[in-house]
Image 1 (cartoon, rainbow, N blue to C red):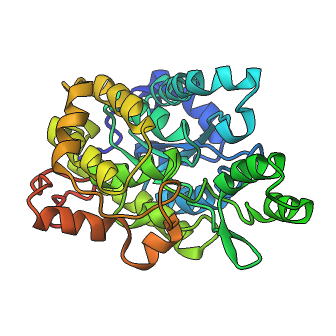
Image 2 (cartoon, helix red, strand yellow):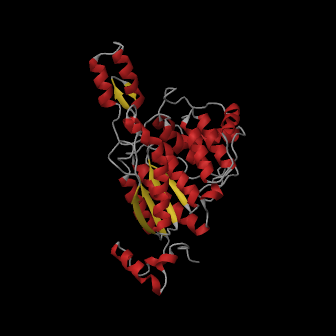
Image 3 (tube, helix red, strand yellow):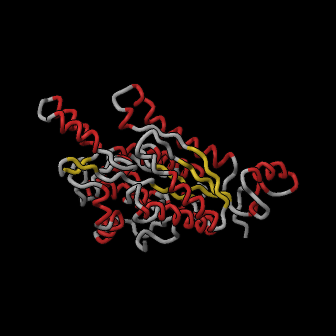
Length: 352
């Protein structure tokens, strides 16, 4: 059976010799044209800490696709960051960027008839934008989160980006010294990775595990850690298997799996931005889901995690105690999760 079910339209036959000639310039050789073409959406940039650690993940995924029998093709995806644009005219581009990201991925994947898609992003709008594209195209796909930042530290206190916003208020009110104000600013973001609390990026990445579109345990890994790169490589292998099974996003993204994702958001005290993003994801997947459904889920879901910004802990702390799979297991045991929903591995959420 041929797994290049779409790309053969642009790589097969006598009339496609010009297409193959151009692809040879990118590294294709005899035999490669029969392999599934895998688009790797690359959200790397040095515009922000969220996305600056993505390139090593891209490199691992690229190599893993080849080893698994696919032909990888990378393309860029833009990003803007709320934490930098906030309070300026630049913030007007933030939510719009979600649509630009979705369009950029769809344009590249459908423009060259790719057989599968691996999306790697790490900032607020990378997440829903990527999943919207995945749902719209309905080509076998997997989402790889770029990873969370590690907490900063100043005088024994763990910090997140929210600490600097709080410091602005405290310093302005005369309740913080200049030394501490500058200390917080300089130490709040010590590594690559998205904002460390259960802010939008970590909320969406966590919910993608519950949705079934990301590997279990992958959303709480820190961006600089080796396991994050290993997870990107494993995701590539899983994607190739999904192509072989013809397992598509809309087989996974259903009303029940979206309820699982929203349940996870409620249980972890996730960002309210999950509301507007899952409304958009559901629309892209042509799944009926309304704002009233969020309230229905909220009323029956306990908050299990004490996470920043409302609580005490950060994403790396959650990872140490079992991450999202541990929370999902608790929800499943309590009868609050649809365990029969399919995941990208071909196993149900309960099996995972």
